[in-house]
Amino acid sequence: MRLIRGFLRVFFVMALTMAILPLARPLPSAAAIQPGPGKGWLTIASRSDPDDAIAIARQYANRFPSVIVFQSSNGYYGISLGWANIGEAQPLLQSLISSGSVPADSYFTAGARFVRAIWSPSNAQTLALPDLLAATYLRNGSGQAPPAASQPRTATPSGQPGYVTGLDATGDNFLSLRTGPGSGNREIARMRANTTLSITGQSGNWYQVTLDNGMNGWAYGRYIAFGQVPGSQVPMVGPSASASVPEIGPDTNQQAAPAPQQQTTAPQQAEPAPQQQASVPAPKPEKPAAIADQKRVALVMGNSAYENTAELPNPRNDAAAMAAKLTSLGFEVTTALDGTKAAMEGAVRDFVRAMDGADVALLFYAGHGMQVNGINYLIPVDAKLEDSTALDFETISLDTVLAFMNQEGRISIALLDACRDNPLSRRFTRSLGATRSAFIGRGLAAPSSGTGQVLIGFSTAPGEVAQDGVGKNSPFTTALLHNMDAKGLEVELMFKRVKQEVYDATEKEQEPWINSALRKEFYFNPQ
Image (cartoon, rainbow, N blue to C red; front, side, top):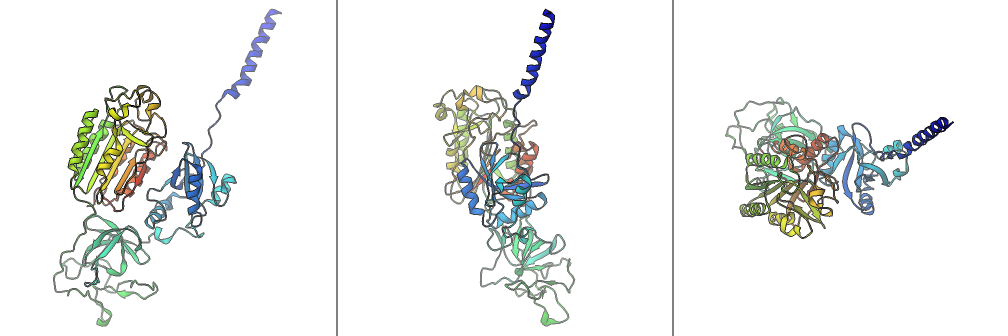
């Protein structure tokens, strides 16, 4: 009988345990709101307050009825204009940025962090996922397909030669090269008569062109002719003598007029270039210089060998590789590796001296960093940070460095591959481990750009953490090194590529963030 009671007791305990175990399992995390494979949400901003996010979304509702606000898993609220297929995403995004319809740092994301829809003008947040997606497909605001400007059609075979002609010598006497097809887009450079180029596409009355120095953009087609400059000894390549160039003007239905450099059997139908005869040698084409591509200085710092916490594997490697890359791109580089407070201050001072007369100033920092009360700090290797007073005596204020960099007429770029954490909530040695991914607080604050032209690139999005990586360099630095020397790649477009590469390399765990106040375009490698 005792044996039977013992068996029943064991059986009861086992049964009770089996009943409780399912209740003890952690609840599944909220499912992400994702449009599906090969699709992405066009995210234009994020805010920590939901009312602020909704207020921004309302401003876009008339033009983009697909706009929607999501709560993210990191506590922020993302504003998306809707989703699109990846195949149409990049040209659509470029068109919207070029026209000024969306911020320059807008980007597409798969939505892995979007856990709840909280607002949309169509009340889509109350719908089941299939209906929500049907209501938030991204269009141009009128129910039509994306604007034609976002999908340039090929005007001629790729690489068709051409040149600038027909300018008014008594007027401006130059043709603007712009970021997009339209006079409202930013001017990149100015092209004089007979500037040679390669025509690669067309959108309405505008041609997409690439110059001999590698710069590319859009130009008004009325002042571009196909072929070689008249009088040059290079054989004609491309259209035959009967080919024509569209006569571009206010009435887009006008008939095409013959290309200026080509004669036909009827002299009255030809329109020779007014500034020269075919028998006179053509002047050497003028090549516009890239904006602010003059004196370049950089400060590169990387801290790995921390004395009061575990060593970081990659920042020193990141800084050394970045210094070499910037030197190859024409920068005068000041370097500080594994810098103490005194060493980092000395490097900053040398950098400030070097900035005298500089057109471009760049700061790169890899290592530990944090923000306290909206102020960002870079952490030297000898910092202890045992209490809040250590901030003034053991760290470098990022705002101080940016204040020296920020000067009217100068392009300033700050690239921060830092942990973006706030270790003062616990002792420094307990809060930061062997990577830059310990999450404390809300990360680095977005510094004020003041009145100057400042671009700040963070290694990860607001409220997120950066990975140190498993290779020789961090994912962020790896992507920067891969894209900085790309020919003719504007810096804000370069960051789009950096974002995508980091996002893919970290399996959607890390997405860089950019805060840009640039009013001019800048190319690390314009040639």
